[in-house]
Amino acid sequence: MPPRTEAPEFSPKFLKDIDLRNSVTRSLDIAGAEVLHHKSPGITIVEFPHNGENVTALWFNDRSEPDKPERGFFTLEGLSQFQENLSLIAKDHSLAGIIFTDNLPEESKVSFYGIDIKNVFGPIFEKLSHGDTGEMEALLRQGQRISEKIYSYSKPFVAAARRLAVGGGFEFMIPAHHIVQGQQASYSLPECQLDVPTFIRDRAKYDLQLGNPNYRNGKVLFPGWIGNVLLYDKLSNKAEAHTETVTQVVEEFTFNGKMLSATEASILGLADKTVESDSDIIPTAADYITDTFWPLRVAGRGLHLPNVRPENPAVYDTPGKIAGADLLYHHSVRLYPDFVVAERAVELMIDAMWYGLSVKGSLPYHNDALFKQLG
Image (cartoon, rainbow, N blue to C red):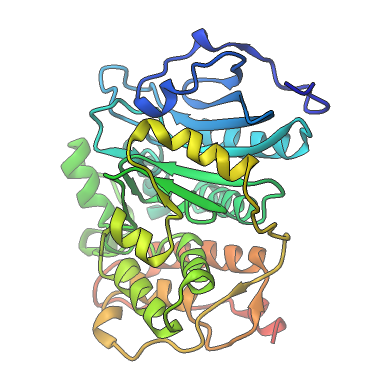
């Protein structure tokens, strides 16, 4: 294996120190594999040899409730480690690329969850409802920055899904250069339909103490991340069908709760390869890094947003969906820098959560100065 030339912060150790729990991550238990980073809660990064090069595989850990091994939510610690280590890997010339996967148990029906609603998002959401926006803005901005970094990453970044990729977990898959999936993979972005207080009450068995009374009647609480924009950009760049078809797919997926199957993802070009067995996922993903040409994305190349918002008022029946549509459709064919769109996503999500929570509520757009400056 080529010697590591940079990123001295990594501390390699034996693979036996970590828990390999499914057919995908167990395939990393090969000669020459090393653990570069491992913390719980947090992330694990494993380096392994493939076709004469060094490849890294990365997944999120969550051991905050050890009696629930099916959990795989993101924590604040995990997001910070993810962001930091993406930078370290980008600088390490001995590492050829990254595979983003999971090590949830074999029987798990989900590969990628989003943020830990009960322990992370819920308390931050509660503070927001009482007027404290700082922690929510920081959380959302971190998510946008990670998506940007993946989208414009200087090395091949391949996402690998065995089962359902949902919410923030899928949002980190969307900007990947390639997606390799198992036969049972599926994809969903429920953000625009998620009633957070009801969701937390049903799943975590407690009521949030919310300061804004609109939250009590809220049906749609946030419009989704920059992932929705990246989904459109990715499909429109790959699809052979007309842009109108892609737009309709994104509409249904983003605003009407559609779940994509592995077959649909393959047809649309969202997933690049469907493997016969889950154990083939890592080797196939690694092939995309070491054996195939991949389009180098240049930071700041811009996102091509849809030109016209489809005339379908029923789709935009709640403030969160209106905010999501506003993020996707700017009635312009020009390219927007990634960081501008991501920053806009933070603003819209905060506004939707604070001002637009009741179904009959309105969503004020009080700060369009940045976009006006862009013309």
